[in-house]
Image (cartoon, rainbow, N blue to C red; front, side, top):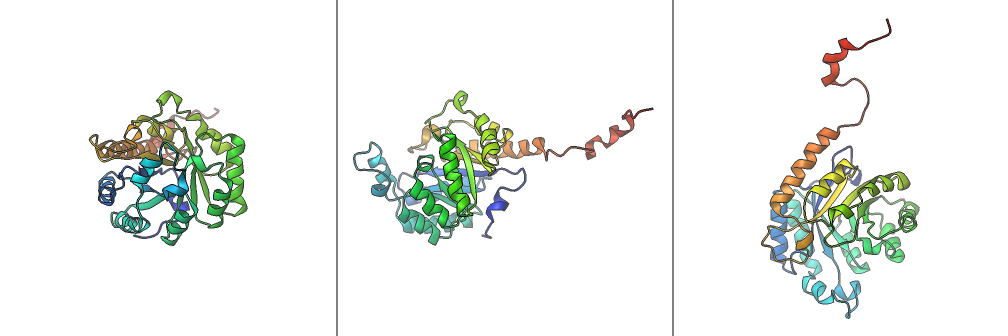
Length: 277
């Protein structure tokens, strides 16, 4: 698969759509491959997983420790999954949750890091990621304006590309709590590409986020409604994702370039313009 520059991923008004497989494979390599095969039929640009060592991600007394340990894949599996995704003409992404995982993904030559909202305030980890010089997408759930500004400053100091995703850390998220107006706020305040990471269980809110200005959409993904996976309450199926991508591409045409002036569809009405007599 031909490498794609970060700037090309988020160019113009074309939204970059990520299927967030996450840990919906339940620790099964074969299921992770099936998620890739399924997502490749939907038209998404990328599929994303989570790469971590459980003991470095959380402590043994955490209520999610056992779930994470069950869903942990060995590093060598991700090398195979990356190749499989690229063979399906999709970009492979993964979220590292520790230094070892980030270093491994760097060796894999991932095009982009995706960092979770939980690490917005993890300053040492952000600095380590920024210093690698790999473009990064950062979710901003729970973060204050000052916390986001601190994160942005870290990447600017290292001259590393950064995009922000508006995100509400609620699982599942009620649509009325999506606060899509924050997309505009992030754009105005931080002058970086902005998108949206969704935790509702439908396609309407991520679609509306594109109308609100998102140029990246990340949505949790499962194969079908019978999938027994950790993030099922916030995930959508292959059929739903295919429809979401279709609707996003239609919406992009409707939104257009935003350029003012005479356009081709208006030329027939030009003779009716009323110049001063």
